[in-house]
Image (cartoon, rainbow, N blue to C red; front, side, top):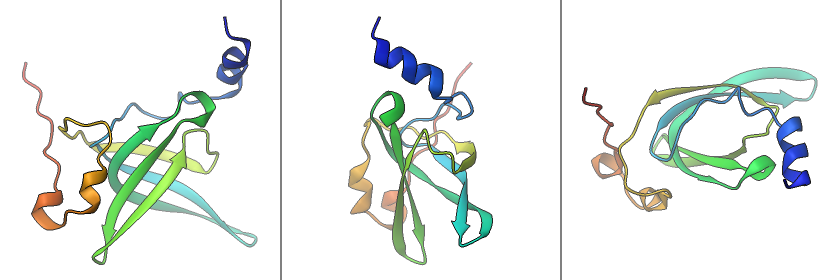
Amino acid sequence: MNLIKYVEDQLLDISRIPEFSAGDTIIMSYKIIEGNKERVQDFRGDVLNIRGEGKNKSFTVRKISSGIGVERIIPFSSLNIVDIKVVKKGRVRRAKLFYLRKLSGKKARIKEATFSK
């Protein structure tokens, strides 16, 4: 067994983060420290991609704020993540959704995944 991967798994606690994939809409509560003040800010957006493995794993979230696209790249191992909620599961055929950067309006929407019984 790879010793480095074993030690990383012991130190890294990703179990607090729910399962999500590219195309899902999430609300991420993120701790922001400004001087000696600390506050929690929600960031709601679509997951564009998930990259990396182990302690290097990160994801990109994109939202449109006042007509301007805002993206955040967040490592899974970040201690500033307070909470992540999956709002909607998206139905996409790609692992990387970078083409959404060029689209706007209705074209930039992601279809919601439906599950049949």
